Length: 419
Ligand SMILES: Cc1cc2nc3c(=O)[nH]c(=O)nc-3n(C[C@H](O)[C@H](O)[C@H](O)COP(=O)(O)OP(=O)(O)OC[C@H]3O[C@@H](n4cnc5c(N)ncnc54)[C@H](O)[C@@H]3O)c2cc1C
Image (tube, rainbow, N blue to C red; front, side):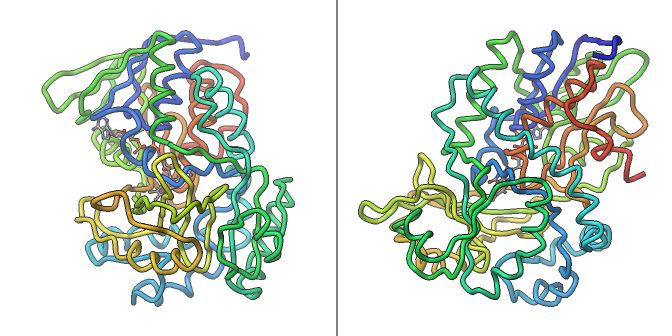
């Protein structure tokens, strides 16, 4: 503690994994908290992800050599990233700062902030799961990245170096090891990288719902409504709602995931927010086939994750405008490759789910006071790992707002770093 602890009234905007976690951690510190949500808790990005609590995500998304992949991305030559021309104007503003981080030196620098977040991811979730009665969703069997050739595996040398550097435990698997761990995976892989410290959940949406119920049990209030604008004046902050209402508190936290950038603009706090769209669809496993943990086929550009609802197939990044209609071409392209890997039966859904990963160019979230503000805070930008890092981010933000000593150094996530 710093001796200047404070509590008060707070409104947290957005009940995804990140906002719910902020709300719980503020409430635990005595804050009077309202969680404002447009639809229902955990129904958007935090619902549809691959369920991986990715302890090994210590590197940013802009990787060394990515710049040389741009022609392939622009011409549809890869299933990992699909570019749609609806995003052309915005991408011109965003891509240079994103690509600038794709050097080993920048990756190393950014890994400090990423590793600090993921280091605590499983313990922070477990603590909340215990309190929420939700431990049944957790599996601690790691996840496996699989490679179709030795050459492809060799490209992971830098990643392995960084995992070693941060003490993340992993095992390199040969085909025999893979067959023992995942007997229903077809023998098409040359190598696997089993990230042992990673965990997974079988229903991210249900986990969010359980955390939201915990928040209410702790005395928090959930309000349904859509925020339209935020601002602050004197000793209070205000959120205007679509339906004409206005809510005020001493502090407001913007945790709207991919919707955060737009709302922050209303407060004159412009951050380089971008959305990386992605899809999922569930399939039945044929016969008695099972998958014991999520599998990431790196060459195939897909993840297969065992979920309560079936096997969830997720695909890579689609760069398109925010409201561009669903174009699940990547999902269609990876399905045959996924069927080569695992006996997938019929889909259980009429159409694929679309979500938007909330991203910033350096792959670090923005946690702290919004630029030029004292009473508007942000907690968003968790890109591919927001399910993983929601609870630790919520705790960090609540500690900062409460004037406590923080569990990790908040400096890398300063929202004003882009100024
Ligand atoms: C295909 C895919 C796979 C992924 N896999 C993983 C994974 O395995 N592991 C992992 O850690 N991460 C994964 N992610 C990323 C992760 O899902 C996100 O980083 C995370 O869910 C972001 O959480 P959030 O709370 O910031 O946003 P959200 O979950 O989107 O929450 C934002 C909330 O704000 C609400 N809202 C929006 N506008 C308003 C408004 N105006 N007023 C009030 N409320 C509003 C929304 O309804 C929503 O509930 C994946 C993402 C995708 C797309």
